[in-house]
Length: 116
Length: 110
Image (cartoon, rainbow over all chains, first blue to last red; front, side):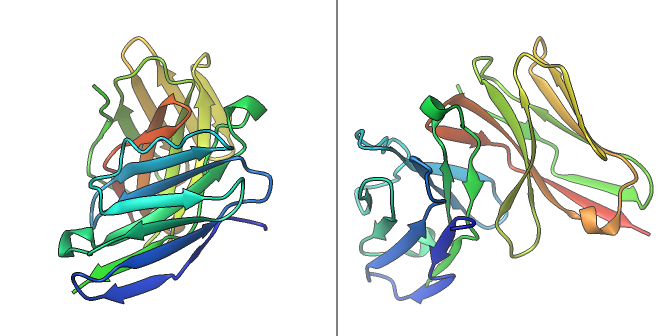
């Protein structure tokens, strides 16, 4: 596609419920990243996928957070048993990947998650 | 450790130049980036500079890099009201993530 797309754009859920966020990267981009932006703050790295390599999960804040990606396509970020502190904008980005000489990350519009 | 610092606010008059400053910690970053975020919108890549350069100009934007002091700046010439946004600098010590500053909120008044 023309850019990174994310769905849903907004999600309201109740504390304790599971949520699943989706990211469609730019076609041909091998690298995919998830970040979290809390209100009034900068972005925190969550997880990174590069091709078929094992993902870098070093930024995931707890074991309630997980993400999957099949090949070089769509990724889903799952938050289990949501807590109010999970409320944030979740941003996805993709890049060509360093091996292809393209580190620059292009961001999607984000999913705004509100946990009541 | 990894830390990127920016001042929180900048207020300028329309037509003046804006300078947004950033300090970073990791000298191994290959690229350094500036992103713009408008209210309710995602992050827009504004410009970036390769670490072996000390200046890059792109229309109204000038990026200056001082590697010795680990200082990055973004100058916007002839600032317009449409430039009002939050500006994030980011370093890339590893290809697998960006380290962002907290963002500088630029307010342009007439």
